[in-house]
Image (tube, rainbow, N blue to C red; front, top):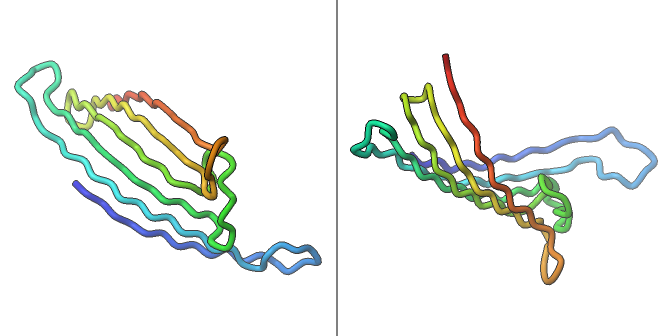
Length: 122
């Protein structure tokens, strides 16, 4: 499977006496792909490697608001899903590397995350 999407958002704020903008625009671009294939094993019948790239910009007028994970930046995700009983028993292992927007040189904000999760339907 492969998916590409672009999300655009505009948030309007009530005017006040402060210096906050009246409208904040955001944009997220995501490209992802995965391929599930069967192997000759009763223990692990289906493996699905997956890859995702995201460019997240929570404020398109500000190019330096990526100081904390979850804020604007670039994110690369590498994962492997293991299906034991269709979608009813799945193990996922994923590595995420995030770099904050506007980051350059030494001390740039980054995050490295290893996520392991198990899904069991009954």
